[in-house]
Every structure is written in C-alpha cells, then in structure tokens.
Length: 311
Ligand SMILES: Nc1ncnc2c1ncn2[C@@H]1O[C@H](COP(=O)(O)OP(=O)(O)OP(=O)(O)O)[C@@H](O)[C@H]1O
Image 1 (cartoon, rainbow, N blue to C red):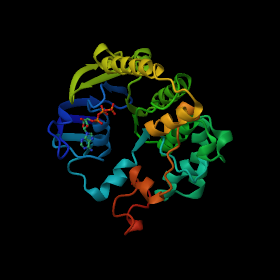
Image 2: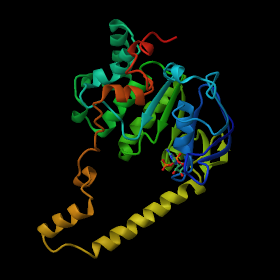
Image 3: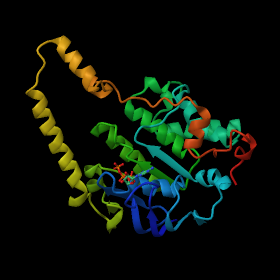
Image 4: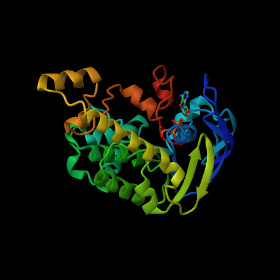
C-alpha cells in the first residue's frame, strides 16, 4: 500500500539529507506511528507520501502508483485517495462546520445529494451532528480537530495521514481524537501518524517506526514510544522548567511592568491567556483546495481540469 525503497530526500540549500535510505512497507489497514526527535524526518515522510515533495533518490509507491512517474496534472486525482490532518487544523474560517466538510466533495464535483448524505454521516461519526451550523471560531480545539478529521475522511480515503494531530490539544481532548483515529482505522483505513505523544504510542501498542537524523532506527510491530524518541521531550521539559525558574526570579513589580514585559517578549499567546488554541483562518478557497491536494497550481487557469468525478 505504501512502499519506500531506498528513499533519500535532501532539500535544496541544506547540507544534510532530511531522509537517508529509507525502506518501509505499510500494508493495507495498518496503524503506524512515526516517532523521533524534532527534525528527524517524520513530516518529510508524510509530505513524500502526499507527493507534496519529491524524493531525491529511491522510489515511493502509494496505492500502486509510482510517485516518481506521476505527472503534476494527475497529483490532485492521486490525493483524493488520501486524507490529511494537521496539528493546526487548517479549517476555512468563513465556512460553517458543514461547509468545511462538504468543501472537499464540492471541489471534486460530487452531487448535492451525495454531499448531503456523506457530510451528515461523517459529522455523526465524529460526534458533531449538533454543531453542523457553527463557525470554527465557535468550537473548542478538539471540536475543530474533529471537523478537520471529518473533512479528511468524508471521501472515504484509503489512507489517512496525520501530522501531530493532538499537538495543540489537552490530554483529555487528545484521547478523544486518538479514539476517533482508532475507530477510523478499525473501519479499514490505513493510518500513518507522526507524533511526540509517548503516552498514546505506549498505550496503543501499534507499529512504531522511529526516525533519528533521517534514518530508521527502529521498526517494531507492537512498539512503544522508546527511550531514544523520548529524549528530546525530556530535554524540552527540562529547558521549560529552567526557563520558568529563571522567569520566577524576575517577577515584575507592577501590572504596567508586567504588560510591558509581555509585549516586549512577544509571548502574548492565546493559550497563556487561557483561551482556546488559535484557529487557522484560511479564507483563500483556492489556496486551501491546493493545500489539501484537491487542485493543482494551474487550477486557477483551468478550473475544469481538476473538478470532476473521481476516477
Ligand atoms: N522545506 C524544507 N526546506 C529545507 N529543509 C527542510 C524543509 N523541510 C524540512 N527540512 C529539514 O529536514 C529535516 C527533517 O524535517 P522534518 O520536518 O521532516 O522533521 P520532523 O521529524 O517532522 O520534525 P518535527 O517533529 O519538529 O515536526 C530537518 O532538518 C528540517 O530542517
């Protein structure tokens, strides 16, 4: 279903390859975790599977399609077999929940009746039937991620790629998202998920592929997160604790000073204020269609080219 054969990827202008000599075979129906330190190559693997990036050497075959030989024109059609979920949700801020999910079907020219049935079923599956008319700003982070998942699976893709889908969510909400991904996998969809969430990886005991500096250092059938993969998290936690201790010694005297300090340090983050995670407002419809792989770069010049029934 997903084959990497001696795949290497080097981005232009970089000294070291992001991926070196990667060999992977993912079978239909598998749930695979990609783990490893930041910069180890997890997202690069997902981008190669999506054909957002091309290999530097080696071959990738996804759903029987050699991605080196597929023409740019065919890439949007190829991507219709894949759903993608990102850490930052990437919802259309000016559309309702229903329209966000319907959007990817509209772009590929599905009929109104088909869309209505598919969107209704999918919203029910992700538990958002009663939020169909809400705007993304009216949803919690977990609900927004459910919308993003609904959008990714509404066309019943064979493969679901998830790049740190719980990265912006609290542990309880993350658990709900992981359960949903498990259910989707149980329905037959192959899931490949890049994550730093040691707890879920350890709990689920699924296949774990661990990357380190662009190489596979572990490919275990019923694996855990692993000590090597956990190191950067432990280091990040230690750094955060040290920074918090240093900050505690520098408590501002007055409210004015506190505000001034916050503004000048640029840490005016929503989560620090106890608000929901920021919504990615992408109002550029053509842009998001392209990002989701539903249009190619020439689609603006020739709309008919990519809008049509799935092959
Ligand atoms: N578009 C790009 N141009 C240049 N270098 C890139 C690009 N994308 C990724 N890289 C580099 O490739 C390496 C692998 O990055 P990648 O994003 O795949 O890692 P990752 O494991 O997903 O990291 P993270 O956990 O932080 O998301 C890194 O050294 C990164 O800096």
